[in-house]
Length: 98
Image (cartoon, rainbow, N blue to C red; front, side, top):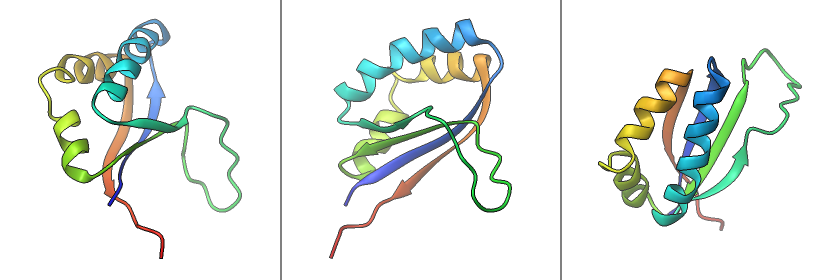
């Protein structure tokens, strides 16, 4: 069953965040993930969602996603992202069609 990392990021330091963005993309791919959403325009249609820079990553399953997120390789990039931004991140189990 697919699993997703969903993040809502508020960038504070664009230069540091650009460094994070450039370094993390190949790492995501190496760990079996792919971008579904990567900071595109947000158009609220109901309520006040408070969404800014939204990122959605898809992984083949939760074990693979957790292995990426908790890896020693990703840890320094989490610190870099947190230095460059505030945000909310969640790991969510997906749904198989049918």
